[in-house]
Image 1: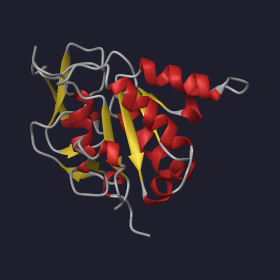
Image 2 (image 1 turned 45 degrees about the vertical axis):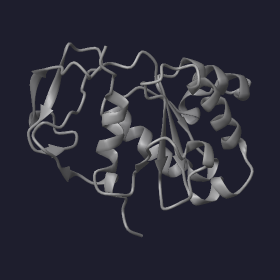
Image 3 (image 1 turned 135 degrees about the vertical axis):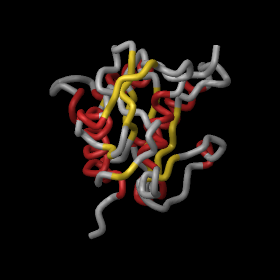
Image 4 (image 1 turned 45 degrees about the horizontal axis):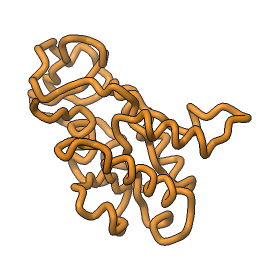
Length: 187
């Protein structure tokens, strides 16, 4: 099995961003390798379009993609992105449908993880996506709320086709996802 590109260290441009502390007033600038090597970063002031999300990124996914999404969750958290992930955030005994709805309402972003399996069959992911799309209709027109992320080559649900997607399996896909999760429209 070939490893996912976002699962291995990659070279990045000097001005790439990697958060260490999302509450900090400055950000580290990557000077070489993307990864967990803290000494590869220098501190620089934030650009005006870069902000800190007020809520976590909700990871919307099919149970069949749990392994890929778990790995994505760990990478995002290591890069300073707060995430809501059912495996980590649901407590036994909670009404999971209610908690998922609350989490989507509180989220700054919904990362819609897509693959061949869940898109072609019925499942709860379609319900989550419908709820997230309804929530997206309440957002300002120029904001990013839903980020379709293809985990592999697959069709994108029709209601998501107008939203620019990220191909996590393509070169630079993970870095594009990070850019989207850190983007704030000019005010």
